[in-house]
Image (cartoon, rainbow, N blue to C red):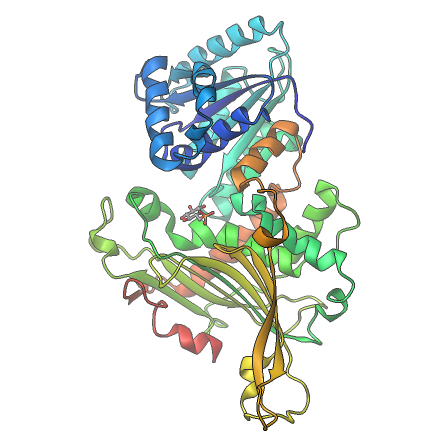
Length: 478
Ligand code: BG6
């Protein structure tokens, strides 16, 4: 468990956002109830709508009941938690409105004898981040200034910018106002137990690493599939689309974890150096080399969702074949597929090994379904399986695929923290390993920008709800 400071005020911009309601407040509530937050914590919601502290508390309570009723089962804690919630009205765009926030933080600092720690959390659309950071600076609230005493840090939600250019601009603004050690670019996938376990699996087990390369591995596929649509995030999706919402961050971070080189140690920078190097080695798609390496799709009915344009060409599905130009992975295809409203909700990485040089056992095509695989199931089940061929009972020597499976829930009795629990604690403690560094953000955007350019503005292919995606996805694997 990271070391926790004595006090911390968590200032949430976008405190009434979908993300804050579904993830942040439930995680903060649990952490507070378990005693994991700093002893002297306060949560300050910032938003445009004028509501009193009392109304804000009631709204948070309602959202908790809706999205995380199990959290409220720590019933006797609720009064203490809600007393620590405050609200400040501010238009994020108006520099003057930040003086109220500064005043409030000043009062809190005085109560705490001038050593108040502040964690700003931006749960806001990507376009607002640079404005908020600049306005914090004007109000004297930037991380490089310390007129209130204590530390200041900032957590910025994905998508971090909407392309390489805006990410660079945001990095420049953030770099003016905060030191890199104070910046936490969050991708909650990095807080998932099963994602963290990919590194442990790879680098703590002697038998896999020697095989983890182009000599033994035929291909790797990464799937992030959801059986629900964009919910009520039409406006957000119209601005982002799936490539920016899920591919640029979650999918590429999974790819980095499964394909990176071993770090020299477990310091945040050593791990992030290797991830950045990996992302930098990914071959960019171009209109000339796209061939059948890219399929974008849109689920039927997307255009009738609330706040979506009736002629929208925003993608809700993407499948891309990627190559990594380095010694370990040259010519090994990585298939990445992610989509909304597909047949099932699951995230997994499948590493498929080469077939043995000779197939003694039938049926003839057996390699395609008995080739060795390591399967990381990230969710909903949290498992790692190894597939291998075994003799089917009976007289003939026929191979069938069988699985050895490790299941988190049956192997470990203690319940792990969820991604937001862990990452909030890490940010408060200043532990950056599971946050994305500036260079990785930029490499990831360069990959996604190239994909978008390679698509050449071609409208996405429609696909039926609860299907496997557009039909032409099959050609990608062919
Ligand atoms: C978010 C995306 O970052 O991740 C959502 O904005 C997506 O579109 C979600 O549904 C998936 O995360 P999880 O952890 O709920 O599977």
